[in-house]
Image (cartoon, rainbow, N blue to C red; front, side):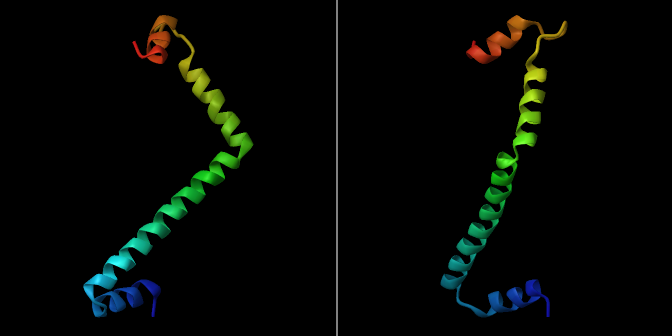
Length: 77
């Protein structure tokens, strides 16, 4: 029996108050996995350098986006 099916069967058998606990734990697992993926990206120095270069390039002035526009964006004006 696959895990997902076994979980569904168990969920149908346990009381509502225990379902709240199960939901809380499942949310924890989901967010932990997302955070671990984020940490992995942040630890990758080459990827982060590439991202910073791309961000800087995106903020460079161009004829359609002059320097003044970028300065206003960063100053909050």
